Image (cartoon, rainbow, N blue to C red; front, side, top):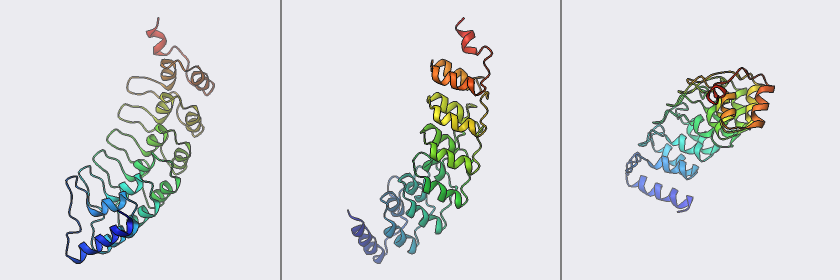
Length: 228
């Protein structure tokens, strides 16, 4: 169905006193669907007639979450201007910033930050938005987050930093960015694993050389001991 048809259908339903916040079996309201379909006009109409902008579906997501997942900057801006809770978390503890950090959409990331998104908010895995950018190898997004105050050495529930994750992904370019902004190259996770350990486990000679050149503590890593 086209966007204009959607708008006309909503207008018809509103004129017949339809419950604008009615949910389907997944907890989705009409506003959620407008966000998913990038239908700004319909979203505006729904909000004008009392749609609950912070209504959650069964996954704990509000319309703003869907707007940023679909990299819809203008629709996201609409929701924010009408009171969407920018730091609202879904059932996984993710905010809108967590979600948009997975996509190469610098404008929406900056939009959320400019409206007060908590850049170091953690999800249920202890990960911030920077983790999502790093794990998806989005250098530009990672850099934007860092320049706006993302904590470089923040740890997830396993004690791993973003540098651990970039090394695990064999992403030298991201690792270089993190180190240039002060990431602790010798940080250990809960298993006492450093990024050099990870590079050795993966037999990534290029990454091993890179890490050592940037100050990784050689010593005798635990993997050396395990192989003797």
